[in-house]
Image (cartoon, rainbow, N blue to C red):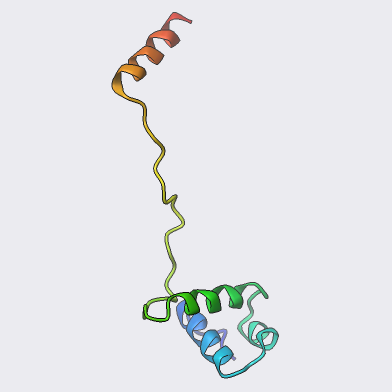
Length: 84
């Protein structure tokens, strides 16, 4: 049924069909997806209704960067390692 369309189109079609009162179990079966897949995209759609690109993948990279040590501390660590 909907298996021959790309991933982004599947997300859009799945949510559209859900909004037309289709049952989630029936939709995921026809899309060949897991039961968790469609609720994920329904939630993404509901939280980003104003964003027309809600169906696109988001970066899975860490949102925070690890704090780095200053140059003096780095030199101290290297000196200690060299002494070992």
